Length: 90
Image 1 (tube, rainbow, N blue to C red):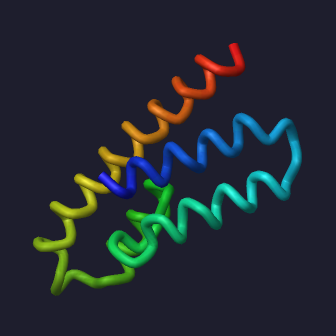
Image 2: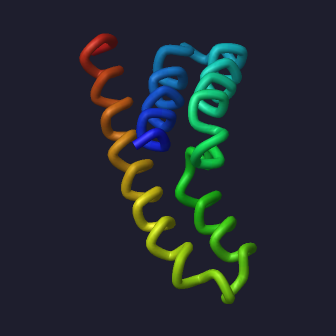
């Protein structure tokens, strides 16, 4: 759940930034601090898959379930952040 909320924070920061890179960087920092200790703050399905591959095949069965849950949370968080931005920005 934390990974989804952090991804939503990142999407909201990107949508509200109006091209200001400092706001996007602060959104990444906020999302990372919010979820970093518990989930690793991947915030991106590609990074989650890269971590799964780097962990190796000996831990694959345990990490595969966690990977699917994290990717699902990231997708839901992305939709939630985009929808929140659509409500406020139009």
